[in-house]
Length: 181
Image (cartoon, rainbow, N blue to C red; front, side, top):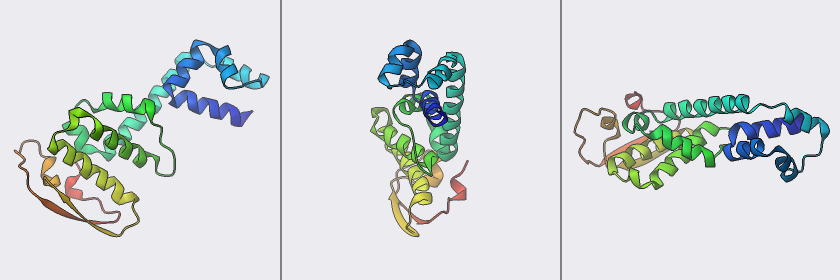
């Protein structure tokens, strides 16, 4: 019973559609999920929508703040990212050991597919921050990567950034200090 209740709670906290289905018609929800255990239904009946939504908002906020830490320049340059993250988070739930990093990489891939992020400079920032995250996750010790803008100048918004080929030599686990805001 405890394992089942934890499973349902975790899905209610993290999946908006699941949560909506649960609170719109609990009996239909129980039938669709094949819930017949009396203790479990009693437990689920005690759940209040306001409490679940409050906790779900807190988890989403924590995810967003982690994304901001992993993508500092992107979130500084692009002011509408939080709204995009809220859309993205409805369809993606990270799993695994490095779920925050996986979440950030999936969010970057999502942003790169959107038409509003076709500007080469923005794409360069997103790709560079993805490389920082991948540098933490990848098993390779050394990598060489080419960028079309100097990623170390991009964070300084006051400069007029011009396209220039830049090579970066990556060492596993090392994050360039000059890039962090």
